[in-house]
Length: 241
Image (cartoon, rainbow, N blue to C red):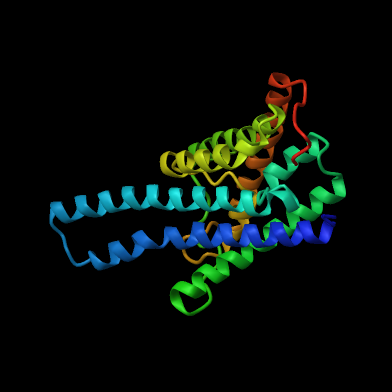
């Protein structure tokens, strides 16, 4: 099959949109739980809410991880199944994409993320987000968390490919996303998610905060490329980018 650039961009757009639907949609579950418990003030109730938040965080990470694994299987043969500009940047640095292809991928992924965020909010509330970019800047240590999350995510993808085990990318990617989402206080690891989250309502970061997140993610992707190339100087893949 001739996977034209148009086909690949459509695959990346759809996958990124579905990713944001999962990220934003799963993140709204605990909000409803807290709202239902907002009139209760006992210590037990607050502990229950804390437990619900922990369970919801892991559940949300599991949803996103499984979705990504499935999408890589479904769309991987068409576009490589990136759904993440940081992963696409790694593919460009490994010469799996041209500069023009990387730019096109990134635009499709970011637009998909924004559309996915709108769809998730509208599906949950019946209306568009009431506000955009309301959360503001993040604490400095959360950017460190974001760097680590992105570094490992991009490494998990490209190290697996260069080791000649591209069939295991869905497992490596989905597994790390579950760990990342469940254990990291700030672990998006994806510029498309960062920009899409701006349009996710009151919980979304400001556009400036999202830009800083994206800068950290792209630096982490470059660092991942350097380490992966050092560890795997010989490419044993079939160019599954």
